[in-house]
Image (cartoon, rainbow, N blue to C red; front, side, top):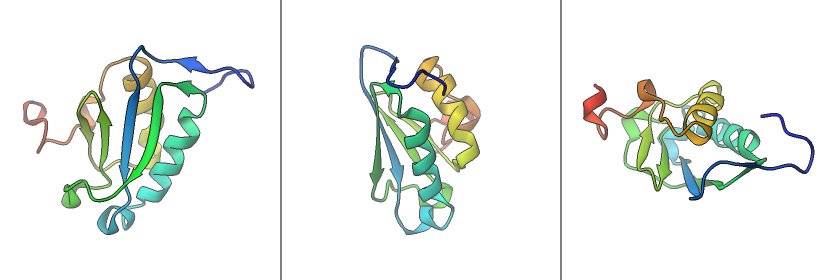
Length: 109
């Protein structure tokens, strides 16, 4: 994300909260780095709040990321996936279909 120092990108009129699971099974799959990458990629974006979360109940498909108020659930998120989510979903308002958790978004299976 490139902006001049001090500039913030405005994403939308509504704030998004991004919950990145930090429970045991997601941590085993590098969710701490996913969280750090989300924080770094969104530091200059207004309206996107990144939060570490407890278990989101999707242990077999972690790391899990939940985006509200959109109610989008991403699964098996890796740090390399974060820029795509930020650009396509947060800035472009189009969820990344191939990363949607099929247990929650069955129409994308």
